[in-house]
Length: 230
Image (cartoon, rainbow, N blue to C red; front, side, top):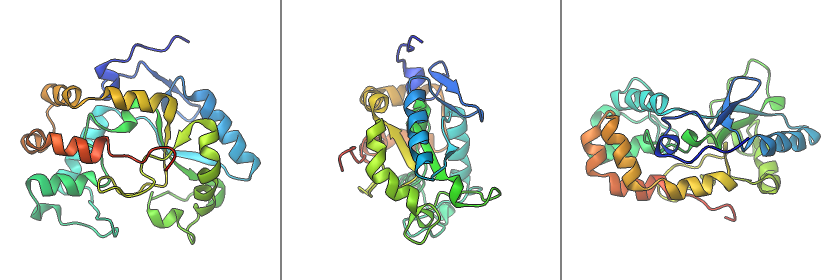
């Protein structure tokens, strides 16, 4: 399959031409499928059933999440997993509170199809709904074994965790897996100008504040990640 030409629409979640559907209907980057299958198979051999909680998200989907958090109809949490009263915040403070756990529409790595939020289905009952909380991946959590397994095995298949540690931007996300061979060039291609153009064409909640602070947000929350050797 010939890979699609990388466009601003792909980078910002406004196109699905680079994606393939998995058996469960989740969409991932078509070039990532072989590596993803090998990762799953290797984990299964060690008694871990890697399942996807979230894969590709479109600009529209991310914008809906963003708007709900801006309006306070979807909870916003701080680093201690305590709910924030978002109605009491405004401007940059409000944006920073949301972006601790939710990406700016147009700047979510999930737009690329290279990012997966994962959990171990073998470690919980079939009706368990993953919350994607750090406690679930801690020593006492059900997904600690998966967390430790990824530490040594993920890189063998080209994957890394961009939010493994807190670097002053996005909160730690031990569940977030990224496919480096595609994600790295995509991140380099997602310039601030590309993002600004996207938001100019597709306005979002808190648009004025976002554009006024875009340079800082881009540096702190978009390109500020853990590299695969950290």
